Image (cartoon, rainbow, N blue to C red; front, side, top):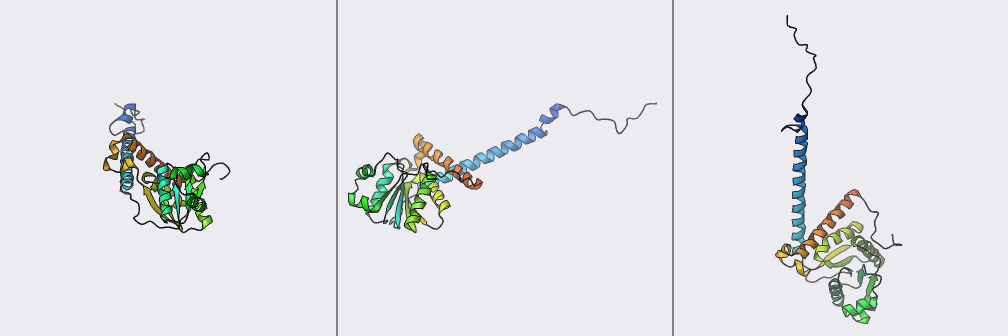
Length: 230
């Protein structure tokens, strides 16, 4: 008589190849990772396009007016514009933030062709800031010391969004008014065809993402100031 198979008889092991079959667990995991990567990439591209559109659409206010002016260094074009605003009475006093320690006030005055009387009475030089985080720390200390309530922020248009984000993170009470200096390479919609302009925009977008990530993680160990001003 043929013996019936026992219901508890061990089943044959699943062939290893089943893991990589169309419905295998590893294939499913790889598909999920692929879709996630595509979605993340699409979000990054969309975010960059939104960032770039805001940059190219920036324009300075027609009749700027504030208690004071802060210019973030990165080129004499920014400082020239800040000096022009000071001369026109757009603010009572000017802080030039992030100046290299080897640069003297006299050099800046000569480079900007500012009168000695205006420079000596109404211009302060900040030597402590190393980067944009440092600019925000240096500027907010100056603003609080002077008790200003509204401040014009002068920097390049591509740098403005991150600058305002860092400033407002430290000081939510002051009214920061953007005065973007339009970069010549970013004046037209065809900036993306210029390798230098595209590189500038991509680099600033990455820095923006890092700044957002730092805020989400609550990482505030870096002041952006030179040693001794932590």
